[in-house]
Structures are given as C-alpha cells and as structure tokens.
Image 1 (tube, rainbow, N blue to C red):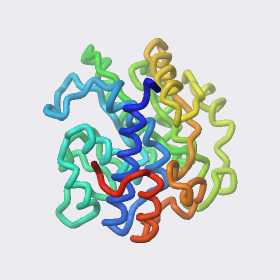
Image 2 (cartoon, rainbow, N blue to C red):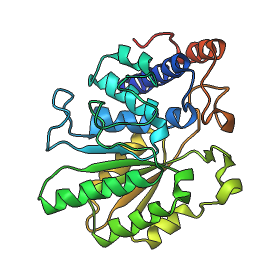
Image 3 (cartoon, one colour):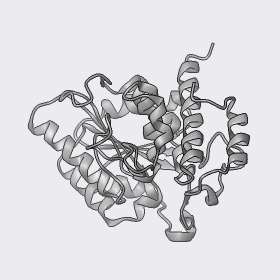
Image 4 (cartoon, rainbow, N blue to C red):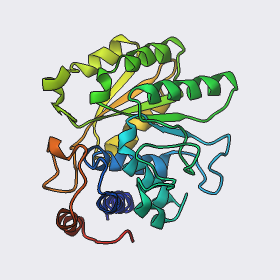
Length: 275
C-alpha cells in the first residue's frame, strides 16, 4: 500500500470541496487552488504542529496563504481538519459568511493572516518568524506564494528581509504552475531564473514536484535542517490539477465551473459530495 494513500485521499477530498464550493458560489479561483492541494494537505495533516480545538494556540505553527485568491484550498483543508463544519464551505463568498473570497483572520477559525494583496502575505509571514525568534519560540512559519505573485516588488523586499534576519524558521512554498490571470508567466513578465534569484537574495533553494508527497516531505525536512537562512521550496505544479479540462488552462484561473462542468469534474475526482 502506498504510504501516502491517506494523504492522497485527503487531497482528493479537498479538490472535491473546491469544485463544490466554487460551483455554489458561482465565482472564485479553481486553477491555483487545485494546484496546491498536495502542499497544503501535507502541511495541515502531517507537518504543522496545530490543534483545531485551539486555533489561537500561541505555540502553534503558522501558515500564510500569500496568494490569497486561492482561499478555497485553505478553506478545504481547514474544514477537512475540523476547524469548522464542511457545510460552511457552501457559503463561500456569501454575504455574512465567514468564508470570503480572500482569507480573513478575524472571522475564520484557523486563518493566521488576512491576505489578498499579492506579496504582503510573505512580508507578514516574515514578521511572524521574526517574532518567534525574538520571543525564543519554537514554532515554524510556512507560506505559500504564487509565481505570478513573484512579479510584485514586495516579494523581493520580503526576500531581502528574511535573509538579512536569518529567518531559518520560515519555509516558503512557491506554487510554480506557470500560469497567471493574463497568461503564461514568461509572456506576462518572465520570472526565471527564479531559483537563482532567490539564491542571490541569500535563500536556501529546493526544487521539487509539488504533487509528490515524498518530495514535499523530503524538502520540508531539509528546510528544517537548514540553519542561518530562510528556505524556499520551488514546487512545479499543474494549474487545475485533478480536473482534465482545467489542467494547464489559463482560463480557469478565476472562473467558477457551471453545474455541468462541476458534475464532469466531480465524476473525474470520484465523488459528488464532500464526504
């Protein structure tokens, strides 16, 4: 039996939840949510020291979804983990719902930072990591950024800051699916060589297949053992992963599936419910 079978099941459940909640909301961002399911599942179900019954526990590890528009992947993980009932997912983007289009730390249990303005999440994650250093806390901070997001200047200010302060308690995942709202990265504004850029800013850089649990865990262990500098894990992913007609299609960056499209996607994922 594949030792990651249970995690694969969780990631698949998260994809089912993403499709269901976006279908219900009739808006949202499927592509970059589906591409990050393995990364987020690994963090929430194997790596991070967290407790759904104590979402504000001071000693917990932190997660910051810097690419806040991919909120559905975070909400799916939080519901799967037990921070709130799965029924809440069907209220995505509704007025008075605790699950808005971007994460809100004030209203949503388990959300460590309000995000949405691209690049600011990484800066906030740095602040958490520095606070941990100053307070002699053992918690670690994980952040997920997007590749289009790396076109933001604040990403590079934050990269400089983390290296300067030797924040070896922060690990950043780059969800490198190659597509952003206006097209391919290299067509909009090429970010390559992204690995060499982070190295030049003083970061430890690891490159992996972002859908391989084995590679994800190996990279996280390497990051934990890297002292004196921050680590970025550049994860090659597939936008829209798991749904054939969404995979590598830029049009699914920010478009919700219709009833018929959702039905087709759920058939591919092996379920029409969140169970």
